[in-house]
Amino acid sequence: MFRERLLEFALPAAALIFALLFWEFIVWYEQIPPYVLPAPSMILAELYRSWGALSASLLITLQTTFEALLTAMIGGVALAILFAQSRVIERAFFPFAVVMQVTPIVSIAPLLLVYLSTGTAVLVCAFLVAFFPILSNTALGLASADHNLIDLFELYGASRWQQLLWLRLPSALPYFLGGLRIGGGLALIGAIVAEIAAGSAGQKSGLAYRIVESGFLLNIPRMFAALLLISVAGILIFLFFTALSHLLLRRWHDSARRKEA
Amino acid sequence: MSATIQTKPAAAPLPGGASLPRDALVSLRGVSKVFANRVMALSELNLDVREGEFLSLLGPSGCGKSTVLRLISRLTNPTAGAIEWRGGRPEIGFVFQEPTLMPWATVFSNVYLPLRFRGVSRREAQGRVEEALERVGLAKFAKAYPRELSGGMKMRVSIARALVLRPPLLLMDEPFAALDEITRIKLNDDLVQLKVSLGATIIFVTHSVFESVYLSTRIVVMAPRPGRIVAEIPVEAPLPRDEEFRLSAAYAEKCRETSQALHSAMEGMSLA
Image (cartoon, rainbow over all chains, first blue to last red):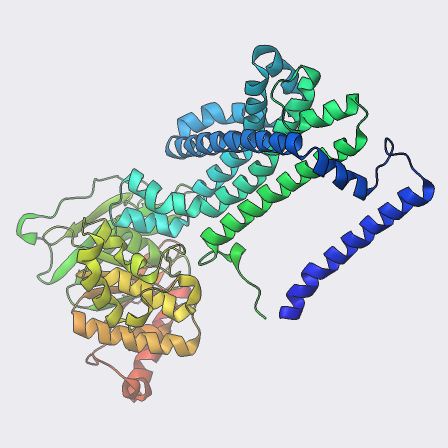
């Protein structure tokens, strides 16, 4: 079994190292200029050199993503609960939530940048894309409670709120965590999209702004370095929510089941 | 059979239970149930449930036996007719065909649930939950999660939960149908023991002739379309019963009699 886990880790790592070495080799062999395609070594060097500015930007992007996600989480769950408790409210407002989700964020960003300060617009963009998956998944989860359990609760005279607290919310947890994992990645995307749409007018200097800035200065290695950090941010967010999901569900939900040897 | 159904509100228990037979815990009088899709699940059913008996409702699918349980437990209301209780509606335990446990909670929390809705704190409930688990032989599994249990064990937790309020009336809707034969026989024996030690009234829905004869003091055979009672078969053998009863001639004879009644029910003939 240990051998299995080792292979799971070692094979992609080996493929990555091989790809990087090949990349390094090709740049050197074909003498490709750095402003076209920098070698991995050069990117890493640039990362080290500009670490001050880039790490600060990384922090800002992560902060925005986190704030947006927190707001989306609170708003999404609150609205989902409201929808679950009142069919009237659900029917009235759900279509608006759908419209909000299907309109591409790329087209909304410029409009938001007109009305709001850059920092706020970026936050709102990130919030919008993260909000709907959380709302939608949580609403589905709340509606998916075992109907026999609903009967059981009714049998013992549970109030509608007791039913929500002890039955519907726990039932919705796996769905909510799924929505959160999706929302986490999307919040990052929303923040990046808004920053790029803001372009050189942006004041909040997140990582996407660094990419735009590096483009203007033709500092391609730095562009790659910023891109690398964005990827790392995305991976970290994904791993965090996967771990959270596993932690909360491992004792009871099939999705967190370990495969039998 | 009348073409129109007059809707009467369910009557409150009559003072002194005047119109109920002396030992009836609950009576269904002329109860009809029509579902939204116009299916007549029950048609003018009359049934007295006697205190302390083990009553089986036996019949093919669609004969309305589960509907009777749901009417008694007030999960649904009759379209016509009345359900009368002698002296107020008691605590009722209900065991479904599925174990119906909350997968995110431990066995203890699952069995504690009814007590929570009766305002008993977790700490106060400790003793009663443990007692209920003892009764079904799962005292050591209080901290386990449902996912870690076998089908038979989950069903026993469900039974423990149904018993934790010590209800005078226990309703069971084909609780062992989804289990294998061996587990089923074991749980049948456990149930018989429980019945004797608790002294509760049990209404048991099943489609198994063997099970109904082994467990019950009285079997009511039902037929579908529309749902109605077609036969009533008392089982005189004393409780508790064991393997000997299962192998006896009396048992075989009762099974034959019940089987015949069931057959006729399915052909639409009434023996009553």
